[in-house]
Image (cartoon, rainbow, N blue to C red):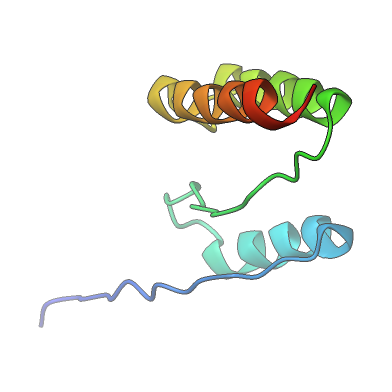
Length: 89
């Protein structure tokens, strides 16, 4: 008899106040499963120059941690730079 498994994809909506607890639950669910990468879709609020700079610093850190590809980081930087030039004076 062959052993089989299935992947169960879900889209999580996580409040930042519960992020640590959500990670604990994911770790409990995955147990010894070798899949330790979670794909998370998010967005960052940029409403002024200071926020833009903070977000860009955070994006650079996420890239250095391997959570964002260079392509994704560069794309986000271009979007923020364009927004800063056009709307944030």
